[in-house]
Image (cartoon, rainbow, N blue to C red; front, side, top):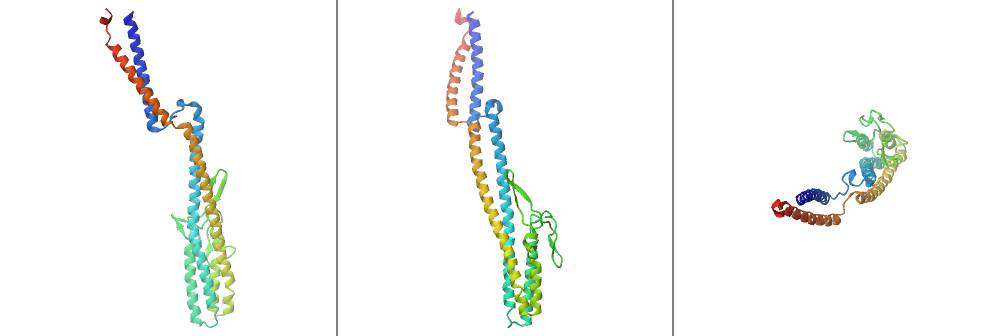
Length: 292
């Protein structure tokens, strides 16, 4: 009877050793990973909140990336359009110089050649490429947007929209029509200046100053819009990043382990396991002779 009781005790001790070892290993894993809920069975009640939190984080990261993508595109456009504005301002300065009655025909011819060079620069800016795509071509970003003589626009008037928050999209591009063709056709304006300079008529040359200023202002208007959109993207990135912090904090509360509590539990479990092992060692040494 005594032998049977001790055998049962020993089996119980073995079971407790295995259980305590498993629990201790789980605590070690929690300590190393910092995760309290690694699988649904760890805390079924928290699973829904954890999954929702993770999904919200993924969406938030995508929105932040989209906002930054818009900013990158706008930055490239801003650089090109700034150069466009400088070209039109320079052309107006040439018109002012060319309207001087003291200039000779040769002087005006030299100025006309300078404007022709500005035309080439303008066409190059209008056909700016980034990563193999024409930034002012609308949806036809694989097609050369400006070509011919007179220059024509081969792109589309569509904006490429991108989602930057739930249900909200913004344009990540400016079309060639907006900056180069309407309401002022920048190419035609420079053509008219070249013609006026070659005519040698100061009145005709002076008449080009207003359309040239309008062309420069057209570029400035787009630069102002870009500045507004870029500032808006900065604000949206900040909003998304703040939201991410709140979501991650909530996710941490539902998912992460309290390291202080885990370390305390490890200490308790190690002590319990050690005590159980000592008892099991003593019981295992008992034999039938101990009871004779």
